[in-house]
Image 1 (cartoon, rainbow, N blue to C red):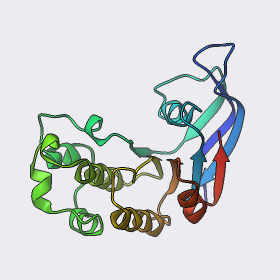
Image 2 (tube, rainbow, N blue to C red; image 1 turned 180 degrees about the vertical axis):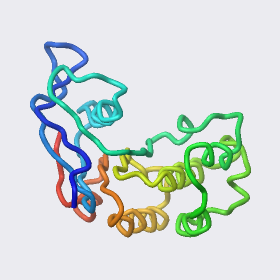
Image 3 (cartoon, rainbow, N blue to C red; image 1 turned 90 degrees about the vertical axis):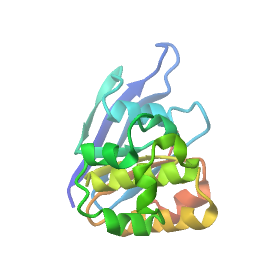
Image 4 (cartoon, helix red, strand yellow; image 1 turned 30 degrees about the vertical axis):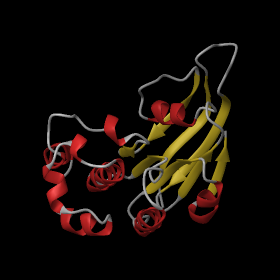
Length: 189
């Protein structure tokens, strides 16, 4: 399987005398899940911002394939004035919509609503739906199941694992047990 993410000697800090990470190096291949684990403020979400090129590293390089992401806060992921289906269809083909909404335990009618009309868990599953329908090679997951109850959490994680043949995943989590269960490698920040 080909490499879809390569982080080489990455250094970054918001202050030059305090680096969040220094000379961080790892790669991710299609078919793999790597988990990024660390305390709050360790730079986990910042790493995603660097991968997405929303921030520039102090030094080092990042090369990545086409990616989509699921953020921890689903309310910030959607525009409040448009239906979810409208926003999903703007960025992804919806030919596999039925298959994914069934796996995510979502009703089609929910997608016709505005974001504020859904619960946090429903909206997070819609965010996961959008990310999966984009058919990325690299899926960035920032605490993707934290807003979900335990049963849905397990079903969603199984869905991610079932889709590894077409992508690789980088997972931010505070849940070390979850990381041990699904990840090929755990990277501590």
